[in-house]
Image (cartoon, rainbow, N blue to C red; front, side, top):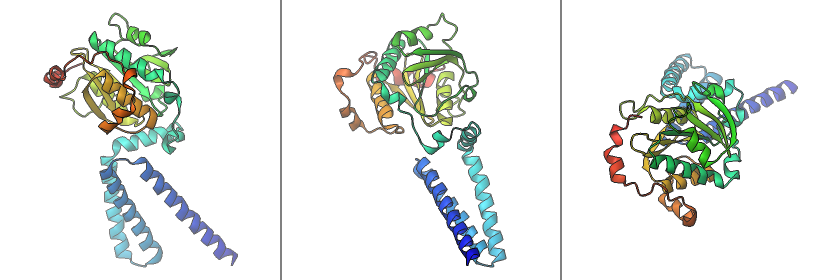
Length: 296
């Protein structure tokens, strides 16, 4: 009786751990098509386990195992970026990021968004290239970059951001890392994305590259050639945008920690009196005409 009780307890724990792991995976997947693929793969794995445990069907079991192996290889190729990110987080011990525990640093200071938008708008007006990475919970570390840059650890301010991207300074070509209400480092070299190589320049590829690897960070890009403002999130780039649209996106992301795809109705939640009005006079037409020729 004790043996059967031990076996049943072990079986129950096995099932509970498997269900918990499956729910964790489902909670981290946001794209519908990816969710379908994950459901199908987990169904095949569960079916293969059921056949091996409760039915003596050697041939059927071999066939299902072959299908599971083929699907595993296909998903490894299809999700190589996500799997690499998973292994990096596991290797660096950032379990809080995997479990979805998000810091409240970015939401703690209401002036953070205004300072970021104000700096981006002024840099855009002056056509000074800029790359600002805002960590919303990915816990970015020096090993996540090609070069970690120069440690700053300074209070975030509009003037400091503008000075860091001045063309006569040695740090203007790299990115600035912002966490909460602080500038952590400057002159950071980001990994480049492989998508849109013929369409985007180095800054935009760097913004796509870091947001592809870490889904809880965003990247503000200012084009040096045209002054166009862009925002990268989860490997997607929204451009061109105005300063008010940038503020709208930052407020939404900072409050809800949600991905792109913000409905237009969300603009009603933002007090118009608090919007930064710099750079809004730049016409969208001129930006669209030059969109495919940006090479910075």
